[in-house]
Amino acid sequence: MSVAAVIEQKLQQALLPVHLQVINESHNHHVPPNSETHFKVIVVSEAFADLRLLARHRKVNEALAHELANGVHALSMHTYTPAEWQSEQQVPESPKCKG
Image (cartoon, rainbow, N blue to C red; front, side):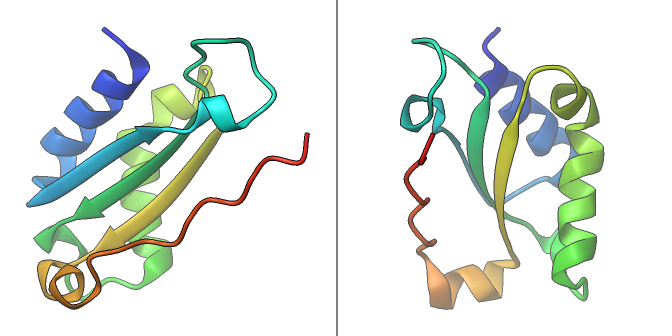
């Protein structure tokens, strides 16, 4: 199973998102071809209701602790409640790698 699929599965189980995107951005960095080391996740979940940004990120980090300790080098997180996502529906572009 790919790292992206594992990330998706774990976030589905932990947060029951109504919207989830797992984007492998490794190709934007100085890594070997077909790497799975840099990801962006967009998670929309009721589990984030009444939580500040840091607490939301902690929930994602807890769900992905093994992956973050074993090969995932970077994880960009965009976490929303369904109401926030309804008004937002887009995330900032990731910066280009300088390395």
